[in-house]
Image (tube, rainbow, N blue to C red):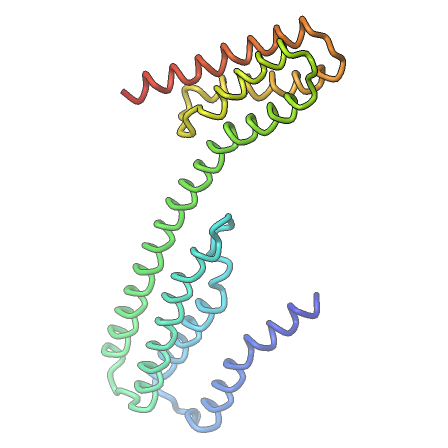
Length: 228
């Protein structure tokens, strides 16, 4: 286990050590009521929910933005539960029903709040990932064509590649599943063009360039139709 992980484990254990030490020294006389143990259990549940928050965060480019609201939820629940739980432990109600109702209501509100944030995070992450994937088609293809263009010395061939580059750079970023295969073909053909450009095979370069232009144009045409 890494040193940093050990240090975090020790830090996370501090509350449990202190709380349990105080509880068993001052709160447990061997005859604690059921309501007290219920509160004891829910306080631990709230703390573990807080400690395990990082595992609820979906990985992604905006991970920090997803982490913050989840910590707000779990921290708020833990603090409220600690306050309510300790109060009930000190009061030690004779009836278990009151304690169960209070604890279940708090836990239900927490879980509902937490699940709502998790659902929103999932939708947001999916949208961000889709957006990034869509950007890759235009950005990656344009960058590759620009690199290829710098290697071409024949003016006429360079003009053809530049025409494709201008088309790619001005292509719509927004995509859909209907044109995904065309996009893959465009990317594949651009990769092939990059492989043969150093060989100075003019006819083959022109042929592949024309094919890329046709595929990219067809992709844009289908997108325009689908967005009407």
